Amino acid sequence: MVTPKTNLTGTPTEQTDTRVLQVVYRVDKKPDFPLYVGEMLDVFIKTTKGK
Image 1 (cartoon, rainbow, N blue to C red):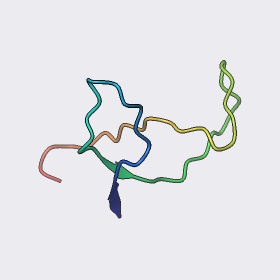
Image 2 (image 1 turned 30 degrees about the vertical axis):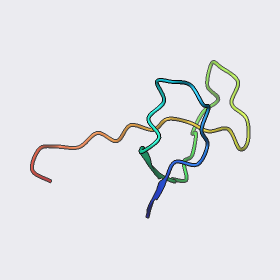
Image 3 (image 1 turned 180 degrees about the vertical axis):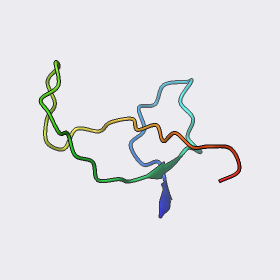
Image 4 (image 1 turned 60 degrees about the vertical axis):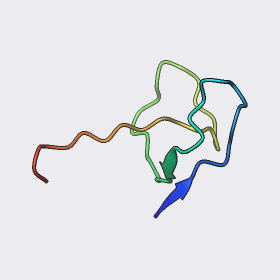
């Protein structure tokens, strides 16, 4: 499920050992900013301790 990051920018501070989990997401209402098909997003998953 988790794959190595393949889109690298080449900046000195970039973490090249970062793992990526691809997810499918849905936006229920139009956001206040432009959102494009195929755009990469950072997704943060909130968890509870011990699960």
